[in-house]
Length: 301
Ligand code: HEC
Image 1: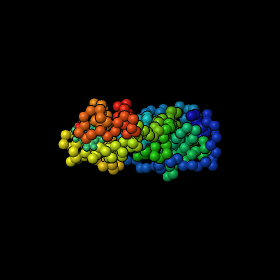
Image 2 (image 1 turned 90 degrees about the horizontal axis):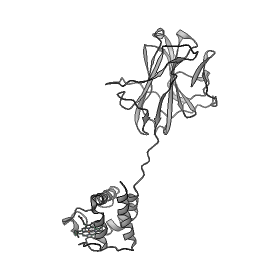
Image 3 (image 1 turned 180 degrees about the vertical axis):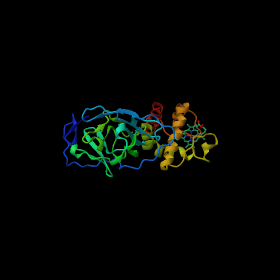
Image 4 (image 1 turned 30 degrees about the vertical axis):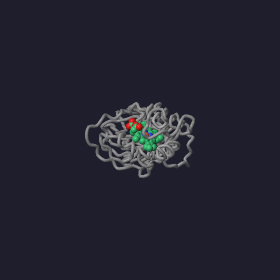
C-alpha cells in the first residue's frame, strides 16, 4: 500500500477504489478499550519503518505487535480462540513532539479495508482519502505515542478468522499541514481457522453399536462395581450417562492400548475361557461390531 498526498487529503495508491462510500459495515471486532499499563518484561515490537505521503524522508518510526501475554512475547499467528492485544507505537519526528495531530489506523483483511474510528471501533473504509477518519484526534504527541489497536480481543468468535490482517498506522500534525506520516510496512498477523475436533471413529462406533447392546446390555451385569467380575477384574463399567459413556469408552481404550485387545475379543466370544460365558460368536452383528471397534481403537493413536 502506498500513500500519496492529494490536495489536503490522503490518497492510497495502488488500490482500486471498489469500495463505495456507502458501505459502513462494522467490523465485528470490538470497539476500542482503554489500554491497561503493561507490566513485566516487554519484547521488542516489530519495526514497521516510517515514510510520508509526499515522499519526503522522515525520522518518524512505527512499530507494533500482537501479544497474548501482555507484551512479554509477540506472535504472528494466533489461534481462533486466543485472547490477544494488538498494540502499536509511533515515535514521532522530534519536531512533532508536543504538537497536536491525529492518529489513523487502517486494517486490511482480504479485499476489505477498515479504519479505526474514534468511539466507533472499526468500520469499512472506502479507500477514499477524504473519508479516512482518525482513530484518535487532537492528540498532543509525546516522543513515543502508544496506540493500542484492540485489547483483550478473541478474533475467532468476533467473526475474524482464517485470515491474515494487515494493520497500517499513520499520523498527521498541525506542524506539517497536508502531510501524512505512516508505516510503509503493515503489522501483519494471521488468525487461524477454528479447529473442528473430529471425533475418533472408534468413539462413534462405541456410541452407536457397543455402549447400549454390548456394554450395558451384557457386560455390565457382572463388570460393575460390586458385580461378579469386580472380584478379579478392574474392567468395570458405569451407567450410560453422557459422561458415563465416555468413561466406559476410555476404560476400554486404555485396556486395549495396554495390550489386551486379543483378550478383549476372545473372552466374550468363546475364544478363551471366560467365567462370564460366551455372549456372541463370529457371524453375529455384535461380534462384527465388537471386533471393528477393537480394530479401530488399535488403528487410532
Ligand atoms: C456373568 C458375568 C459376566 C458377564 C456378563 C461378562 N463377564 Fe467378563 N468376566 C467375568 C468374570 C467373573 C471375569 C473374571 C474371570 C475371567 O477372566 O474369566 C471376567 C473377565 C473378563 C475379562 C478379563 C478382564 C481382565 O481384567 O483382564 C474380559 C476382557 C471380559 N471379562 C470381557 C467381557 C465382555 C466384553 C463382556 C460383555 C460382552 C463380559 N465380559 C461379560 C464375568 C462376566
